[in-house]
Amino acid sequence: MLNRRHLLIGTAALAALPARAQSAKLPVVASFSILGDMVARVGGDLISLTVLVGPDGDAHVYQPTTGDARAVAAAKVLVVNGLGFEGWMKRLLGAAAFKGTTVTASNGAKIREMDAEDGHGHGHSHGHSHSKPGGKPARIRDPHCWQDLGNAKVYVRNIAAGLAAADPANASAYNANAGRYTAELDALDARVRDEISALPVEKRKVITSHDAFGHFAAAYGVSFISAVGISTEAEASATDVAKIVRQIRKERVKAIFVENMADPRLIEQIAKEADGAVGGKLYADALSPPGGPADTYLKMFEHNTRTLIEGMRKN
Ligand SMILES: [Zn+2]
Image 1 (cartoon, rainbow, N blue to C red):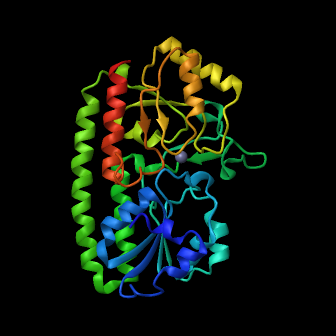
Image 2 (tube, rainbow, N blue to C red; image 1 turned 120 degrees about the horizontal axis):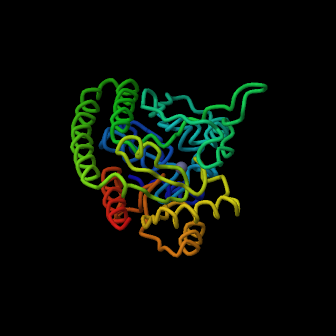
């Protein structure tokens, strides 16, 4: 299901797609891979799903394709994260003549806010983070809500409601799928809490490349220090790098991680300058390709938790 997007790239592949062979299924588009997996769990085989930003893709800086516009134009439901995460969506919708319903998965989620100036001086990355004229610094809302399993349950509820509204005949099936999935999310949430709370608080410090784990930090009690702000669009200055290197040395942080969809070079440079080593890969804003260690949302969360704990034990 998640691979459909690859079929949609290029017009030859598009022409080869059976036009409405699956017309009995509800056509749904999800903006990125993590959301796509949640939608697939709730929709099951009742939907035909297209995911726009695929595995290991960076949804902060994505360039929509003409195939994406075709998929959105044909969709009955479009599921997005919201909170400024998909900055390119407005442009895509302008090009796509979408006539269905948009579900904003993060509606009602617990949202982490911070001053535009926070986040280690990198709050300049998002279009919506500018100060109001003459006013106080604007507040940035962290879009990475999925890094808290409690928020994922809100996503699932919104997805189920959206699919049920677009396809009322199958509402009970969507709700049943959502119920089963939610029970799995609850079970994993309890396990993550147990495992992290077993680590001494002073060891729970992690270095990552961009500020994608604020929700994880708030939900599970881990401190993340990121080299750039909330979007991968930002770039770290030499001063930023020097500051984070000093902090790693001073606090002797060993848990240094690259992210699957971001350029690893910045973190590799920081680790080297701090005489440390990269401790592994976290899946921040995208799943792994199928067959990888994080090819579903639940596996992604388990992988990240395990990787974080292994790294933090060395702190
Ligand atoms: Zn991100």
